[in-house]
Length: 304
Image 1: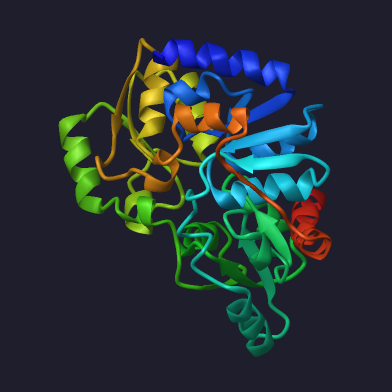
Image 2 (image 1 turned 120 degrees about the vertical axis):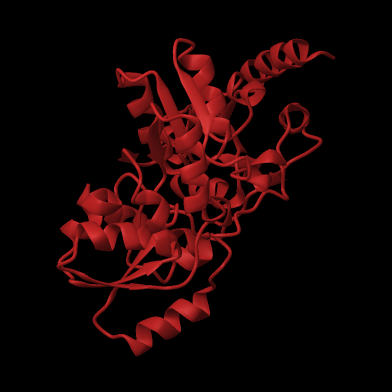
């Protein structure tokens, strides 16, 4: 089948079988076009809660599918490609965080949403890249252990110097590949372009940015801006998606190496096979894990 024919068949089958398809913004264009909702990781799980579908297919990575299951335990949740993990989410384990809490009594453990369900069970509150500043500011505690992304943590520390934030070495290898040299090269090539970067980038890269924000934040900023040229400092698919959505503007990847290979694992054929019941991995979590992992998420929602 051709791409368009396969897309049409997926759309037909998802309606017939009452399946809801979620796609992270880093997915390819042919996948985002057939998704029922496209967005950042936590927004995907929140949107799944509003769906009446019995089955949810996550076109993303494992921790995102786990979060969908935690928020919608009654639904069948399928990760479209079982091999799609997240190196950042898997960098730390529960024993490490328990030991850190024991050595640092009185500290609040703030976990980026990009963590496994198991790790969330021993954390105090979750944050997203768009809510992190607001949540950390709202916490009663002035002593924070921030995991796992030290670049996002450093960005928060810079904005909230009155709080003591302990960073644990970890982060997104995709964003960490972007260097200050890449910034200079891109700015020399496109001197009129605004630089928009994700806070998972290193502080040295963020220091040059005209805007720092989540993936959705970057996209919204570019769409609303009067500027006509942008250097995009996050996964390269975002520059491609923006080029489709804003054909009157120009978008340049900050680095050709900013590619998430785990996101690239999912193909349109994977999604088709999932709907047909011949591929994908069903995500299962026991009741105790869901209960404990929901607590830091519920705390995040409580704090806004």
